[in-house]
Image (cartoon, rainbow, N blue to C red; front, side):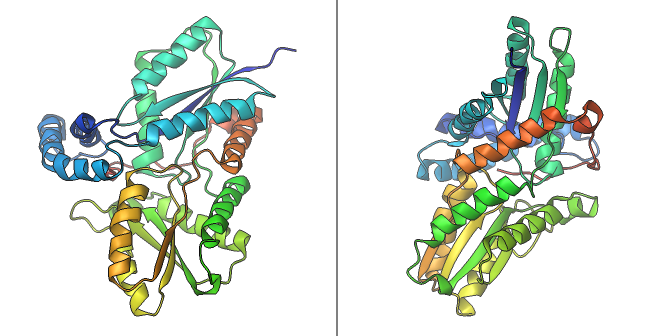
Length: 350
């Protein structure tokens, strides 16, 4: 029996693959109309994006230099794609494609790759899977919006495959289980686990987006609650937010504030859990593992550990495969329906 031919597009923000790519990566980021948006922005966006990228390129470049000179996000996402293909192989003739929002392979490249694959051997289904567990206007919505814009200009040959969208998976039991397993791995580094305070750190978001209906904060809180319930740990825990950009009010408490407060309150053994990231990248490798570590140790923390990212862990790949299988089996109307509100001005991420 012939297996259904299945395409899966994995969406991520992307990252510079060389020192020379840092500034153009930042330019692409700030050229996003969902990032730079104000009256007359259509005229000012490109020069403003160039100015911001040029201004920030040196310091951001130093951060990338400290972690090897480039972002590992493409390599890790490609690894996730190959593992997902293997996990789906018993049921599907599966092919995964990468669509990075701000650096190669860009969304246009993914659309062209899907078009070429469909022309060679027609796909029965195409699953769009943003690798952002919690839905946000700044990530999931922006990536899917770019996909629809680009794909409308370069449609796949008829008949088009059935398109299925997975918008979030913040409470998927296998995803929660993958997080719990990685937390347990990190907890094993402590001689006395009873002293550990769990610090969940998520990428921040301006409060203005939350006010417009962005569900990200609520979904992050629900993920943390599910992880704590599944893990059954007695440890105290804190949820905080990182990567603030600009002068707007962002979600609080900030990671930097939390790392000052906890040692003052006697918490000297910290495990930081990057709760909204599924691969290692600049926020985990530099902002947490270098900057936050230095700050915490200077503030009196005796042991500072970081949960490893999910990357291509068997548990996480199994979760992605389960998501794809469930989406492919759902009725067409249910699988493609979007229940998320639309809103302008997603927040920048770096």
